[in-house]
Amino acid sequence: MTTAAPAQNITKSAHTGSWVQTPKPGTYQAASYMAGELAGMLDGEFVVWESAGHLRNGRELFHRARYVGQSDGSLAGYDSNGRRTIIHPADRRLVILTK
Image 1: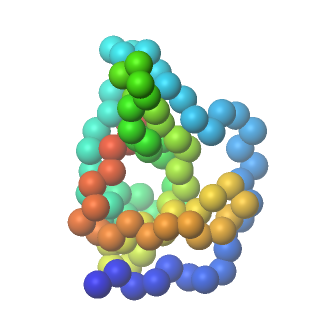
Image 2: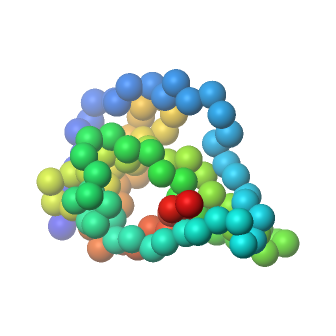
């Protein structure tokens, strides 16, 4: 069972760049990770470009995501204002940009 992430907000993001990207096929690498793997590999708050699916033209859409790993291996996701928006259980598979 996934425990609840802290109710308090995290720091507001100071990121001023793009929040989504659609890289050209063949110009990027993506990998699939279990949420628990990411929570174990990365400490504290971290940012990844997470897959949000494919557009009609077949290009993959990635969005900027902020997470904090929880003690049970789940990932608590936060929006740009620092509000918690989602909790991914440890066994959920996420696709992220790696290069």
